[in-house]
Length: 198
Image 1 (cartoon, helix red, strand yellow):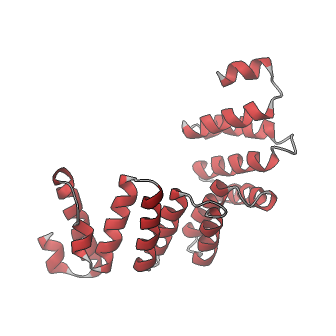
Image 2 (tube, rainbow, N blue to C red):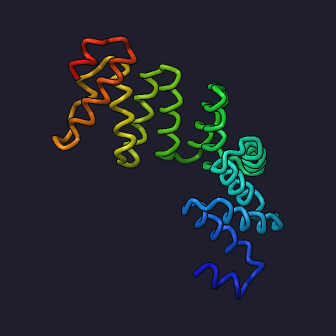
């Protein structure tokens, strides 16, 4: 439908941005980049187009280009929370925990997003800040129930040594996976007896 509109209105930056977003969600970053690049000519769409380009480069593994475009996007519009998430992921990859935390917290302003809480929780978990990670996963789940975030929360509890909370409320059909994850966390903690048992 968007391609049809674009044939009728080839210079519509609104359509180019929307089509770029569709390609991005379809995991076609190269096609998405063409649309975002075309939309760069509009000052009204420049920040969003740069966010899109930065996210495309992130998917393609070009961290330098991703950092450039995402940085320019949030400079122009700090409320572009997906660009902030991208910058947080780049900072996490570089183990720059201060920059990662700042980016994820910026993504939570002015409106909290489940993904931002989850990503901040993952960043804290990588730093062994398990209490902080748990709080962020809980905040994410309060906004949107997501089985992946629920698994992250259970793993954070297990890494804390709180195995009972890690397994609380697990459905019978998911119990084997949950026990395996708790066992793996126990192994990472050096709690080998518990790891073997779980």
